[in-house]
Image 1: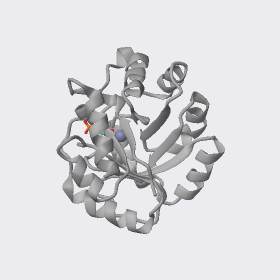
Image 2: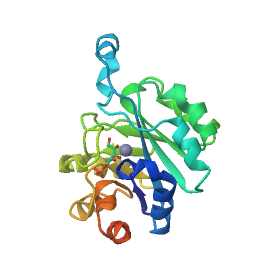
Image 3: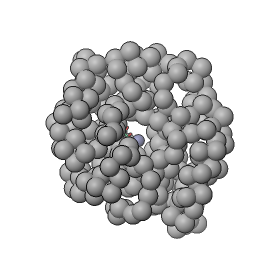
Length: 223
Ligand code: DX5
Ligand code: ZN
């Protein structure tokens, strides 16, 4: 019903050679390129916003990088926004050439449906991400975090698989994406829970032959 999509997380790539890294991944068989857009927390934000929990303690790339990368690749850019104000970025991200725009449910509980239509109007495919502590709710194509967002190279959270299974039962034809700690030792578990989009950063970029890992991930999801 749903095809596998392997999405190397460019967070683990060499940022100084992003265009070449993107091409390398596409040539090695990547379906999507996963782009992690994060802003870091500050003490003031912690005091001012109830949604502070959503800030991640890391700072990565932003809209200008998506815009630059788009000039070098036609690949599907699967953008994962770890920000508290996703709606402020919809237009900019669309113009910059993002393909998918995934925001976190935790910061858009009341307006996620409105946000979904905004994203569609801006020519992108909407996605909703859930932090590990967030229960499954009535939402659309999903990105289930299998690590606390913030960094690559963390340990896969097996306990998230119940969430994936529940979502798959409810939405047999939607893309369900898992993000964090995916690699040769965890992929079969995620595939068995029926996730079909696989984000993998450190396992792909850290391998001597990243193409072999991409094929292995795909084979497991196809089984
Ligand atoms: C974490 C990011 C992930 C990260 C995954 O906040 O959303 O996309 O790059 O990295 P690995 O595959 O190394 O866990
Ligand atoms: Zn991500």
